[in-house]
Amino acid sequence: MLELPAIIGHRGAAAFAPENTLEGFALAARLGCAMVEFDTRLTADGVPIVFHDDHLDRTTALTGPVAACPLAQLRRHAPQVPILAEVLDLCRSLGLAVNIEIKPDRGAEAATAGAALRVARDLWDRPVLVSSFAPRALAVAAEQCPSWPRGLLVGRVTAGTAARALTLGCEIVAAEHSRLTAERITILKKHDLRVLAYTVNRTGRADHLLQRGVSALFSDRPDLLAGKSAAMS
Ligand code: G3P
Ligand code: MG
Image (cartoon, rainbow, N blue to C red):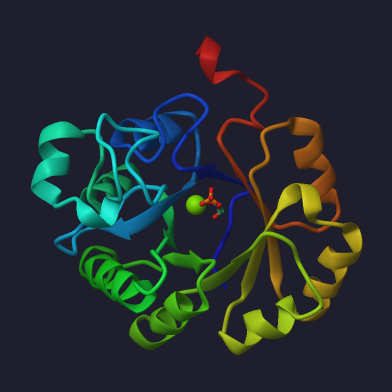
């Protein structure tokens, strides 16, 4: 079973450094973080990059869909956006465990998972936690990397969530924390699923969820439980 730290750095250390960047992953490691989460999707020419949104507008100087932008254009105008291979190389050198979230556009679930996992398999010799909101991406992960643990991402845990996760061979369900109740945590745990919650940035909420049996929390503040502020360090 994959060992999980209580806090997983969400998109690196998104509260303190630009999300999903090499700078953010390096900062997460400096803050004592043992594991980082990041999102991967494909450029127009099929290269897995580490990027959250389906459009470029929010975090880069470019506009339009990521899926319409070739890597060369990203390199020229948004050099802070790393390719997946660069992120894995850095995380390996920093000793960080990784959670790769497959973040496909609709219709590109299998292609995104396939390309991302081919890169990851070549570069990573330890288990990777592979997660996604997209069941098809998780099914591809089960085929390509059967020994790597998988996590089903959901907004809210519903009556069918446990069955869906188990059918996909997932050992983890990760849910949006504000809609995660003690009752839902208990139901998932009865099915031997580990429960994770995103995105938790307050210490009190983190303590509450961990006490109720949540195994790990995604946080923009990897130092959340270290009792120190990155802004001051
Ligand atoms: O994996 C947890 C979390 O990253 C899922 O939501 O939108 O931040 O990718 P999002
Ligand atoms: Mg994510």
